[in-house]
Image (cartoon, rainbow over all chains, first blue to last red):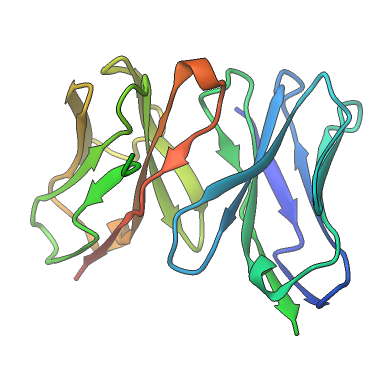
Length: 111
Length: 114
């Protein structure tokens, strides 16, 4: 099956700095890569996703890049704010339904 | 729309007892997913349904776990008998087939087995 690895497990940045979270996947058939944000005690919520026919996608301060050859994808958050503090999960899927999640990155934005 | 609704929000039980977790998906969604979240293993997919039919239950850890979806608006995840290692947060999520792949999560049930 698919194996998704996520790094780092924890990340602290100063407010206004950028944050980057990286994931690798093992199954070259995976073609959909969502990112979920989970605030403390809350449910995971989709923040951005990318499909394998696209190399980069941006939504305001958030961007995701995908390198199919290397089988890795990354989440970039620019101009970080305290409300960006949360756990971020990457996932990979080849059928659009069965998601394999990474182990999560706990991001802390220091005011 | 109230979103995916799970109950109870918290459950504390003793080892050996039966536990039933409940989920009401978003109306009109074709897919329903059950996940388990622990610190050690992260988010794991246990089982998912399409149009009330179980499609893949390979993530169900043991025969002690079972899930049903008797109709489009209700699903249960049952653990019998429960064990301390079942302690985790259990999430239900649903997805509309016409919106692609976005999964909408419920608030979760935090299960503690003593």
